[in-house]
Image (cartoon, rainbow, N blue to C red; front, side, top):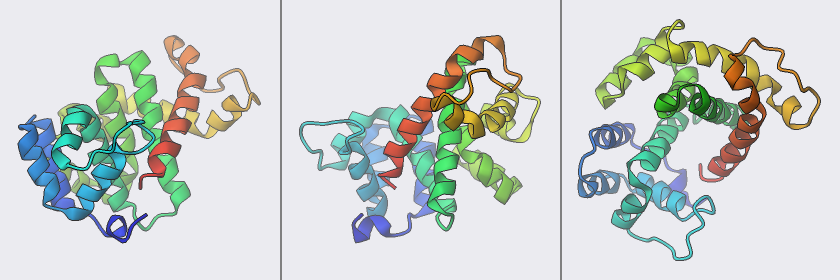
Length: 216
């Protein structure tokens, strides 16, 4: 990692970027916001040129990077950067668990609540921060224009994503055993239509998390 990439990100610029993406501002505006923080710009360029995307030709301009990534991928990465900036003093293994939890939320929501897989990812990503910051996180998310579905998933355990979050919290510690074939039956009460997706979701969340960790 270069010295520039090691520098702390400007959290206010990140929040502004997230709001612009959620509001679907013009890509030119989003590029300008990213350019306000050279550390953020370096991270975005590293992300788009990583093996995760497998580009044949390097992208060197922020405009091309933003156009290639599009709103969805850029939003996902911006939320990851926001979360890891809060957890920057935590051990790497703890950050890995946070990312794996978020991706497991996303992949299982794809089966259970396909309309809300992005929101499920955000709930998973922000859960450890909610535990640390409490209502301060809610204020940050409202300021960034994050949907009520995400906020409900974080703060209301009876909401659809709140319930999924509880299931994933019990499943995540078992993922390694599923992957290694130590257990076959799911010892956690889960919706019937989730059971077939658990092992694949565990494997996919592990793989994607390892790829993303290389970029942080």
